[in-house]
Every structure is written in C-alpha cells, then in structure tokens.
Image (cartoon, rainbow, N blue to C red; front, side, top):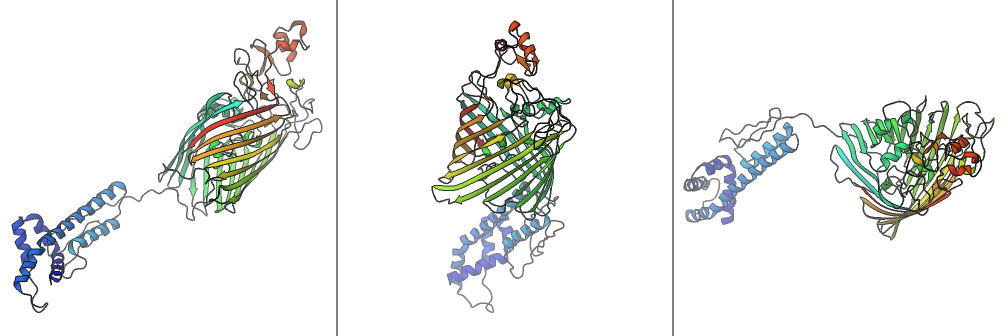
Length: 634
C-alpha cells in the first residue's frame, strides 16, 4: 500500500507541477508543508477504494522528504537546461527551431509529459518565444535569437577523392593526422636538420651538385616552414613559408630574376608554396588555383620528410620543385585527377624569354596499392639569352605496394619506378663548332657554342640537347612501420647539361654561370647514383634518418678536398677565372690566355706553367656521403 500511495503522490505532484514549483520557491518551509499536505488529499471513492485515514496521514508524512527531493531535482534539471542553452549560444548560432525544441523539453520536465488537464506552452519558430498555461504562473522562458546561416568549409557532395591510406607512397609522408586542424584551417609545421659527412672532406665544407646536400661536416638547418591550408565556403588557399638552406639554394638555381627588375629572387625566397583558389562541388571536385605550387615532376616531394630517401636521384633533383602560375584540378572520379598548368616556366619565378610554359598531370589510383602519374611539360623558352629555344619533357612514374601484412615483423613492401625523357629544340642555325665529347676546362677543352639545337640527334652542325634518366626504389617496413629500409638509385644522361645542376663554384648561380663547369650544348654529362636509407619513426610526426649514398660523374663535378672557394673567399665575380691569389682575372670562359696574362703568367701564357697563375677548383668524379637527419612535420 505504501508503494501505491508513493506513486499516486508523485503523479499528483506532476499534475500540479507549475503552481507547486512556485509555492516551493516563495513560501516559508512550514507553509510549504501545509500546502503540500492539502494537495496530497486522497481521491474520491468513485475513483479509488477508500483508505484508512491514519495510515494515509502517516504515509504522507513519510513521503514529505521524497516530494522535496522531486522539486529540487526539477529545479536542478531546469538550471542545467538553461546553462546548456547559454553555452550553445556562446559556441555557435542556434536557429529558432532548435530554441522551440529546447522550450518544449523544458516545459515538459516541469509540467509532466502529456499530463491530463494541463495546457502545455507552444513555441513559435518565428519569434523564438513561448506561451504558457492559463492555469498557473508562467514557467521559465528559454529564448534564442535567430542568426545568419553558418559559413561552411569546403563542400564535396561525393566525398574527397582518393579514399584510403596513402601514407606508404614516396612523396606523401607517413603522417596521417593533423592534430591542430580546425574546421576552416589546418596548420602545418616542418623542421629538417641534418649532419652530412662528405668523404672527399672539402676544406671549405662546401658540397655541390644537389638540391639537398650543401655543407659537409656540419649540422645545418635544411628547412623550417610554417603555414597551412585554409578553406572557407569553398574558397581555398595554402601558404608555407621557407627558411633554412632551402631558402637560398632554390632561388640560386633560377636565372629569370636577372631578366627585368623587382628582385624576384628575394621576393619569393622565403615562400615555397603560396596560392589561393576556389573549389566547385562538381563530381569529386573542380579546383582553380593561382600562385606558387609544388611541381610533381620527378616524383619526390620538395620536402625531405615526405620522401623515402634524403638525397633523391638525378631525375628528381634536376627537375622542378615548384611552378609559378595557374593550375586547374578536375576529379571526374574518386580515383582520377586531371590537372593542367599554365606557368611562367621551368622552376622559374618569371619568363626566361618570350614564351611561358604549358603542362599538366594525370594521376590515377585505381587500387589502394597502385599509383600512376603522368607529367608533361612543353612550349616554354627556358634558357636565358636563348630566345626561340623551347623545351619539352615527359616524366612518368608508377608506385606499387606488393605486400601488406600488418601483424608480421616485415609488414609492408613497395617499390617505385620513374622514367624521364626530354629535350630542347630550335634557337636558330648552327652557331659554330662544338666538341661532341664535351667541353670543359678540366678536360682541356675551351670550345664555345651559341647556336640552335636538335631534339633527337646531332646534325647540320647543331648538337643534340636531350635528357634521359630513370630511378627505382624499393622500401621495406618493419614492426608496424616503426622502422623502414630503402634501397635504390638511378642514372642520368644529359648532353648539353641543360638540366645538370651548376656547382656553386666561387658563388656561381644559374644566371652567372662559371668558366670552370660549362653548360654549352653538346657538353657531355653522364651520372649515376645509389643510396641505402634507414628510417626510425617512433611517431607519425618525426623521422630519424641515416643514409649512405654514392654518386659518380663521367666529368669532374663533385667537390674535392681542395674545395670550390677561391683563396680569401668568394671574390664577387663568379663568371670570371680567378687568379691564384683569389682575385678576379677580368676574363671568363673562352679567354683563358687573357686571364693567365692578367694573373701574371708572363711568358708562360699558353703553357702548363701558365695555368698555375689561375686558381682552379678541386672537382672529382665521385662522391660518398653519410647523412644523419631529424625531420619533424605536424
């Protein structure tokens, strides 16, 4: 009987909920007790059987604490609802429909769920206010002010392209999360520091012939970058700053800032990527971006953290890291991207001559273990001082994951193959004799050539200007990708040296050139290399790398023990021969005898003794390097 009365009393409290709630708030404790007893009178005999009065009174007295607890619980729940509404207003806009729902829920808790005889308040979506029952005082109001629609981030109806895990790819990197990402902005931080040991032990600690190795026997900061991706209402953009050695070595390989004004090398030197654009929600996406974006030619990423090795082969090092221009991206399916480019030229901030460059990429990933990419470039006149000489280039790669057993000690195996074929053509008729064996002061030749070139073969007095290369890498992951080992290398044949990186002899740049390593059409350059790389990756955000590499050139190219810096340091005239004292001679390539005389050779001009009046860099045909690197990416 006691439990029956308890349930009946509880129902009665809910029926009279609103008046009782106000009485409990405003009356003294003794008056409240009397009112509660009055409201808890038993029903008439027609509704329920009669109950003896003495047990009823005792039961009502026993239930008094339970009723107070019910009232306190209702007050606590209403307070919680009010706090939730205020917090919701602070975090994001709440529309009127949400406010109406909250009002209804709050009043149902106070008045009881569909209790007979009680008129519930109704919410107005237009006003965000509510009306209450006419049988009692108004209940607590919960209102919300209508706001403008929330701004969305980038929308893609059918989802982003290339679903799945692609962290195994060379050039993608093994980081899979962005812990600092927000709805509109995904920040990015990179740091890359290394210690390199060149076994030629150059006395000036200067290395050459690469886009990743610059100083020997020193700790150096290769890259430090900060930036990220932004996407608001389908407007997109990306910026990544660049400092460290990359910030000066990348611009020195571009000659175009010397054509015209505004100091483009310094204008762009601290930026590796900076572009803005728009995303259309068509199929799996259409994007249009303008600015500086990374190049995909050569497969490897601009950033060493993303790659399987620290020093890539020549096909990657000697092809563009970036383009300056406009690109489109069309994703007709979730496995295919078609991307055209309209750019200023071949890794150049400006045009070298009259024609900009055209190109594009087709990227196809039909399976989670297959990646195919076709890059093409053409039209651009990319040689300063050689108008009419155009370039075409094809770069094709395949990446295949052949084994994936996460539970095994050897958990993953993949390989990549890349082939490149390119050439230059045009530029006028034959411009004089050239040495088909290659010309270089180190090889005893002093010939020059400034005429037209052919793409396929040397004929009609015009030399062949071509690039043929390949590279291949195999990677093995161990113990849930905690460790990895990569073996690989490649080869390059570049008659004319138009893509061979210029060694920084006496501070030489792509514009200045150097008489000690010429880049004439017909100048031979054949090179090959190999590396073995060990990675330790205790977190997806860091890689500890140990690498051993060997590179060979058929002409003296790599820095030897004597270094490539004149006595006393760079003399400010890299295009001239330097005297044995280190001072500039006043004469460049093709004027060796005059340089000897200017440096005091006297009667020995033109003899082996006369060469002693000239300073000569120490160049070797091979290089062996050990690299220890610590790379971070968030």
